Image: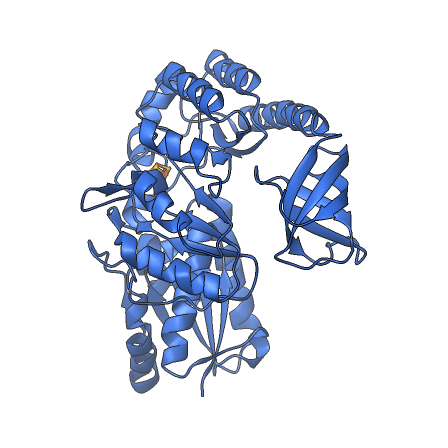
Length: 440
Ligand code: SF4
């Protein structure tokens, strides 16, 4: 029985794909191990969204080759880098890769591995499919409270900075009944929460059914108490979806709504298809209809040609919206994207650093203020871990709005709901005491 070690980089979709890969190979009698030194086969499931993710993977392969000089280990690359850099990866002799497989080729992995074994030659498949949705593969998950469920794959939006449409292909959605069936299994296995995943999750559509319909169907599954989703696009929030979010108690009141930039010229260059005003109107509408809504976001600073004044527009939107938290990135040119072809990466590195530091400081103040406003409130928390990284005497869980809460250990377990009175807060975490076990 061959032993496989897999390491995952990047987004939740990659984590989910790793679970698919595990299921596909376990069916063929491969055994997965947690210690790379025991493995006959090492796979890196990679991300191509940022340059440092790429560099990390190259360093990791060199390191693996160095430490496993015996040559008995097969090393391969999966995921977005596989599609994006297939030729360069295979031709680089120093890497000595044995196989490369893109996100739509995981069912062919057993064949690729066999091919390498039998011929001693490199094997690859990075073909993108219009149809592959892995609906017939039940992911091999590790136990926990939350399960990721991919409901659609690929993306048709072509934001100019993004490599996803090229590495993961066109958008395709799974049949709702197929998603619901998977969620039923998850409930039977004891999962309390599902997070529906998609590169542009709210553009889900299948034979006339939209994302709002899917949320309602998933919410009918007994045993699943919370439903989250990521990542939506601001352009895909029809009234019906807002209504389901507002009225369905199982759908968590949290949206990760990527802003990317607060200036119209930059938004247009990014091909985000909304203006600053559209975004602000959507936020207003969402907050009016869902008063308890928590909002988080992604922002890119230093997109090509972004001036100081245009960056200030982003600052103003952040100040106006008051997101609960934000992931802020420096623009990093990705090979093969529209931006890389059309717009030279001309904002100096120091300028990008200045802007990211400024926005991070601003967001930290806002997050702290928003979190401190929760002090004294009672929050329903789903227990996720029976100890924290820092203390074995503390548990951690999340509010409906996805805020992390730390509270003393007690007579409750992972997967329980507890009512927590918030007593303290930092910019990143709430702290509190359990006043009651169970739902409100
Ligand atoms: S919506 Fe834009 S940023 Fe998101 S995956 Fe699609 S192209 Fe990339």
